[in-house]
Image (cartoon, rainbow, N blue to C red; front, side, top):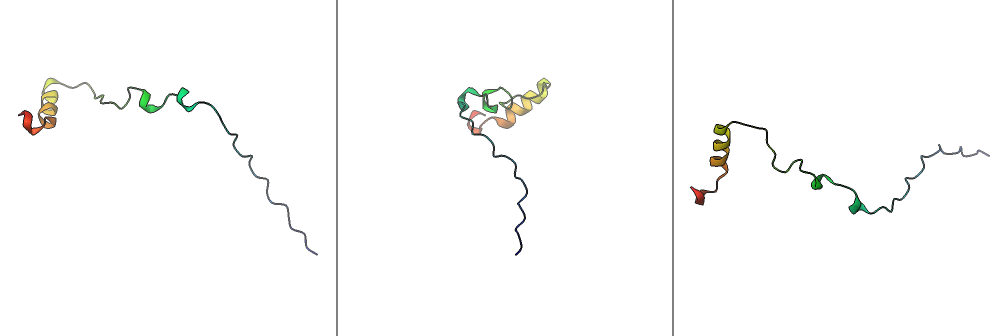
Length: 58
C-alpha cells in the first residue's frame, strides 16, 4: 500500500482586521494629484488659460 506524502506546509492565512477604514488616510485625502503643476512662466500660464477656456468664454 502506498502512502500519500504530506502536502507542503502552507503559509498562514492573513488575520482579519476589524479596524475602522475611515480612520486611515487615503490618497484622496491629500493635496497630491489635485491640479498641482510645476511653476511656470506667465506665457505658459496664458497658453494654458487660452487652451482650457470653454468656447463660450472667448
